[in-house]
Length: 381
Image 1 (tube, one colour):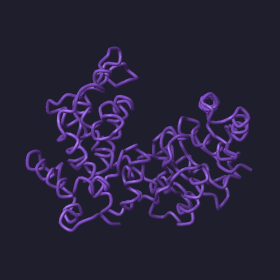
Image 2 (cartoon, helix red, strand yellow):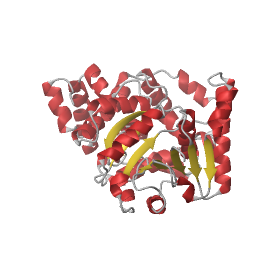
Image 3 (cartoon, helix red, strand yellow):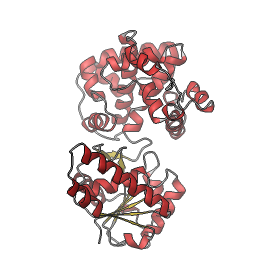
Image 4 (cartoon, one colour):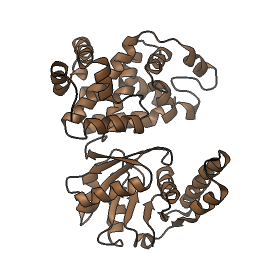
């Protein structure tokens, strides 16, 4: 019997299985393709090799961890697992089929978790006969290094399944936060303005180097355009387009036409050799040396992030403390949005948003809760 079964041997699935094995749990990875399983095991071995070279684990520990990971193409090998985590391609129909197949072999009290980053947990659970045991467990890449797990509760999810998901996350050395089943959950949603507002500034004749420099000056490790290049502009755009559609085309989620044209031109970022920066030249080094143009760029971007966090809080997606924790652990932000609201002042953020709305429209409509807090005082849960 295994402690955890993971469906999907890609980057996320292999990372989850590795994290489980490193925590002393036995895990099995299920995939329909033998070559995918081979690639998954190879990625685990490479990461463990790096950890041995850096002195983080011993050679004996490496062997023990690998010994706790098994690979299979048979769904029946998941039958005895008390927790099954699905980490297949981000496609609703494929995920629904996986869950329907799993339900035919796993125990009645097994928890079925999905690692979806953007799809509805309720929609996935609807493919099962017992949707109450389906829960979201959204890990972040790279899984062995990232501490956050968003525990997503669908409308039918049993509190017992949520507790089991939290317990297993903690056993893996992760920090779980509870979030409601809404588009983008917390991190992907609250992080959207980090990219979208920076792109709007560049669309209005700003320079990528100056925008990124201003954001780094505010304490971020990377500028939003550098990070979009690292992630891949195609992937970054796809997330923006998905949220824009799932939030019924609200103006604040409007994707960037500049980024769309770059994707169409093949300027995907580091993986294509060129995006906002040319990775075949010294442009990226010069970007690091470019002075920030003013504090206004950072204040504008941070104000939009804070506004989205207040909207997320007002809709009951998560608590203020958990939103702050999620953005620091899942997006590597130097501060949480509500910490920024306290530091900068809700009134200053509201003034920034109101000024932008007067100039550019309802994409900058301030959350009513933020407006109340600007008048009343500190943020509370």
